[in-house]
Amino acid sequence: MADVIGLARRWGESGSQNPDTVWSQGLPIDDLGRVRRAANLDDRVRWRDIESSVGDCAEAGAWLALVLAAANADSASNSQLVLCAHGDELTALVCRKEM
Image (cartoon, rainbow, N blue to C red; front, side):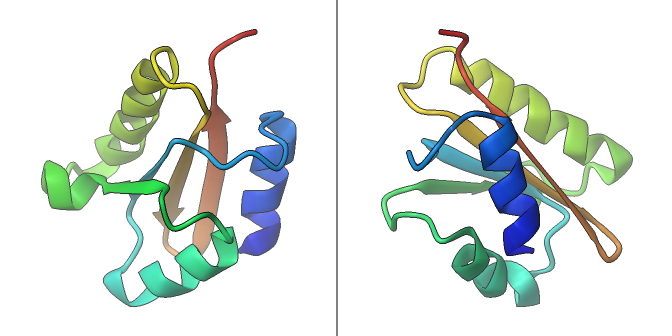
């Protein structure tokens, strides 16, 4: 889990800088604490859970998380981290403003 998040941050060129917001989708409530610890982010980073905000979006939830992160990346000073779970798989990616 930490490897997936670390690779996304490296490939997304966010470096050691914390993201502005983490957009999560499909993460079971039981795993949320474990994911937060694995992400090793500052406590001030905002976490936005798609299911808690919008409800069950089924297969569209991951796309919604991505679109919200991309939209916010344009106005945020730091990158946005997207974490989506599907079964036993975790997908992570970074959205950031092009410099």
